[in-house]
Length: 399
Image (cartoon, rainbow, N blue to C red; front, side, top):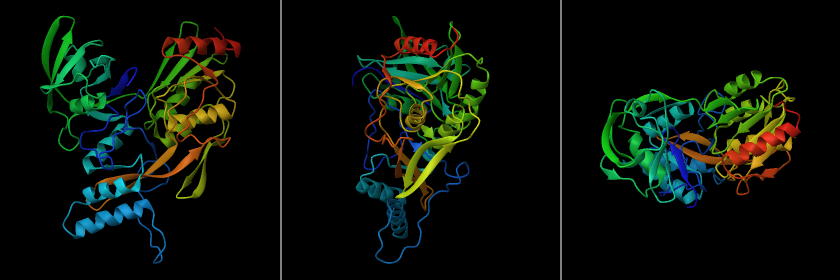
């Protein structure tokens, strides 16, 4: 894989999450499977409850959710594992984005979407030579308290060498099994800084993270970075927009955003749109639509930054802002995941999350497998930021 694989221990799958028949989600340059879903909450936020099998007349076709539930129920009746039966059914379904979670793993996934996770507070990357490097340390986390710094090399986790391993595997080792690695359990890291090599035992902790960060560039432009659409992301973006001067420009940085809660992406769109269509989608063939709330800011110049790691709900937001003429999109083509998943609770407490439909942008563009083409191409890092600042100046933002 070219470039760097990026991941953090908030939104990567625990080791016992099973994906069909050992399906592995390998994204182009980004490996973030935990929130790589255009996901509706299990209950509450959208009024979309956990799906349950409905009665159908004999001979009428069933949905994949019903097939999985039946396989799990039959397995339980026979004294076998409902989760393993569900995995086999998911494998046969051909659903690329389907996942079967143990009860503990699914709860951990839900916690991550709520901005909570158990870990040591490290962000990691795999460099082109296969080395694993610490790219960020969360303040006040166990890693920070142990003196680990950005740029340190991670050489082993609990005695297992990590060089050359997929970064998701490394981060999953850091976090431990979803079913039995709680806060307070320990993990031993092998580290290297220059010529110094050492080991350090860390105690995992319950941590929280802000998926929305805001910073001001020297020219007065406000950068709003959304790492993932976790609970509260939309409100945080609205609050950030209100703090931008009336003539100030905004860069909405969606690079590396692997998705998350659809409801939060729609709420974010409401910060920039005065109502109107965000996306259309279908659930088992039934057409539906998503709309922004009225009253969003439509005056401040806006640029959206995207790349190959911009996925799912982040692509939905990008498509809405682009199609509605609200933002100039800069960067590289997005990943192309335009599917929506909903969860089904199984008899043993495990959860199957299956694709129920696909969404389109307001102009009818299908995202799945195609992605979104930016208005202006730009390279990674500061190159894209510089181009965004130039565009904002042309759009009338103060500098």
